[in-house]
Length: 252
Ligand code: 13P
Image 1: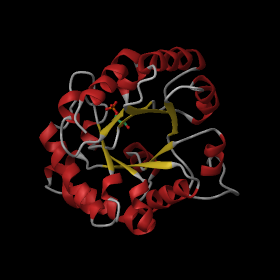
Image 2 (image 1 turned 120 degrees about the vertical axis):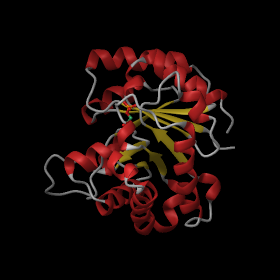
Image 3 (image 1 turned 30 degrees about the horizontal axis):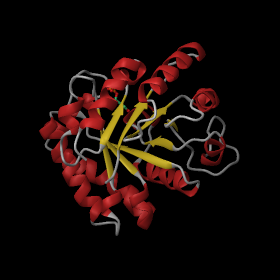
Image 4 (image 1 turned 135 degrees about the vertical axis):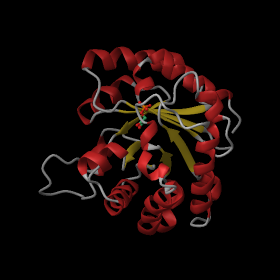
């Protein structure tokens, strides 16, 4: 049975002191229970710190972005090989904040996923519709288009990625998709991925968007929700740990 994955996305938050306290509390909370995979995706300057703090624990480290290029004149970018040197296991790719504020296209997102896979780092590919898309009845069309680009570029490696369905209107708004709304999109993403791989058992689709201690259990109980990508609630150890507890309790 596939483990659920709970990944925190700290976004542009943290400080050396705050990270130290947060990571220590999370590690103490997960103890040696590895029934659910747990990761924190941290700002690049803190990768070394978190990598040191997590040593010997089940907590995995993730980054929040990666360059599509191997190396060269790309000021400000960080390559997958560099992330690898810091023990990075996951990298977020195509988060809606990158698509929105940095103009990342479906093709670039797909190329970034490929660059991560080439270094053995699991890309967590984020897809999701805006409120305008949803209201126009375009949810399915948008998420399928975003997913299709990644499938097209990554071919038979597609079962090695993790997908995160993050409806843009639910991110940081306190407005969560209902379990039924999320399940509906997860099911269509699973069908799309299943058609593209010989290893459908490896597909992992996380939900993200105002997931918290109170709503995690009902979301994680849905048959096609394999875990969560947590923003705000991952910055508070007790909240993050409650979501992890909900994932451990949920059926797989
Ligand atoms: P929130 O949990 O703060 O809504 O953020 C979700 C998210 O964007 C995770 O990547």
